[in-house]
Length: 159
Image 1 (tube, rainbow, N blue to C red):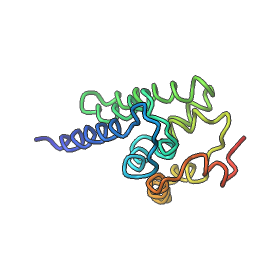
Image 2 (cartoon, one colour):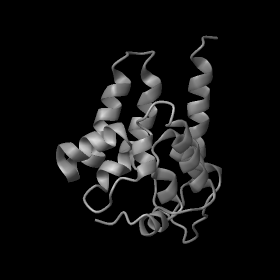
Image 3 (cartoon, helix red, strand yellow):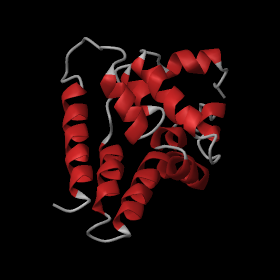
């Protein structure tokens, strides 16, 4: 068993967990819990917060997440997967600014750049050592059932 095997097993478990967490056409939306928390940790800071609103994980976010574990096959595959996700989520709607926001900060940040500002907590994710705080705080917000709309109103993020 190689050193990479536990990472692959964990990623498969996370993918299955996320896929079963998606509401399969039902009207009920469960807010909070481990699945939005893990989505915020693994895919992007706004994903779990928007899962609490009933929004699903998009195909390009799955591609970006899944490509992370392809580096044993070829070292450039994670970058290519993340670049595709950034183009699909942010580049199409908000040009290069959206692409770079998606690539560096998270997929939905670049996608929503035309109508929502970037949070201070999301900017702090770029600062070494300081990034530990938002890496814990944002998933905990998702775990506790907070939604991106609530945060948008509280932090005046509407453009």
